[in-house]
Image (cartoon, rainbow, N blue to C red; front, side):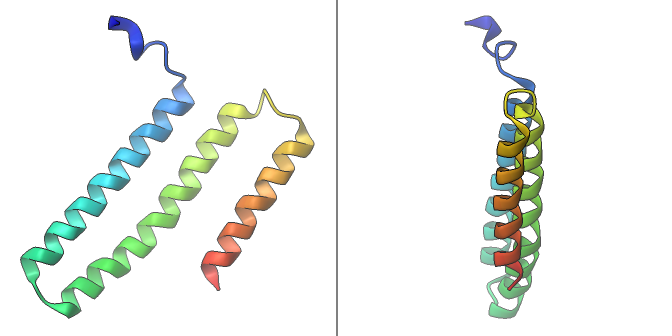
Length: 93
C-alpha cells in the first residue's frame, strides 16, 4: 500500500497532476466570481478559463501520446493526432 505512487506510470501521474491543477483553477475562478459579484468581472474570469482549458487539454493529450508512443504503431498515432487536430479546429471555429 505504501508504494502505490511508485507503481503509477509517470505519464499518468503527469496527466493527473495537470487535471488537478485545472480543477483548482476552475474552483478558484468560481470563488472569484462569487467574490466580485458582478457580471462583467465574471465574464472576464470566464474568458480567462476559455484560454486555460484548451492549453490543459493539449498538454494532457501530449503527455498521454508520448507515454503511449512505444506501444502504438505509427498509423494509430497519426490517427490520434488527426483527432486532436480536429478537436482544435472545432474549438477555433
